[in-house]
Image (cartoon, rainbow, N blue to C red; front, side):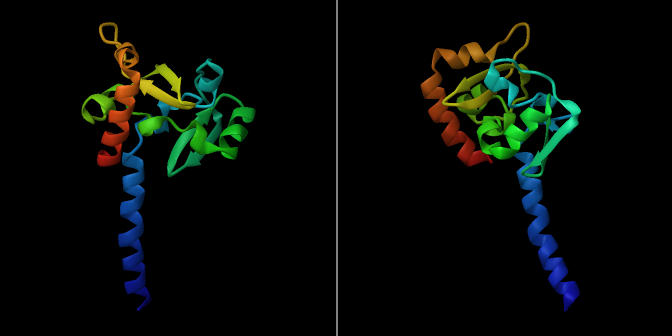
Length: 146
């Protein structure tokens, strides 16, 4: 009987954990490529340090200071990147999960948005050209894909 209960619990819990992780873009095991998500709100994105790590929704975040770690723990939803850290422009344009450059970002509606950027393509510029429209589309697309 206990074995059966254990199997049922595993069948329920494991898929939920996997779904949560798939919602986030992880680079080397961390959201935002290990950048301190709190530091974006000071307009100074900084790489996090191994000494300051937090876990939220089964994914890891790094921070540049103990102060930022505490700030995050007090209100993680405020600092978690929109769309799990995937490129906001791509989510808005076509609902595709595209990797990002953690240095290409925007604070919009008091939330962190990350963008794909190369020497030839800067999706933040494209996003800014029709931000409100892309935001509405991204919200709709994200609700369908995650």
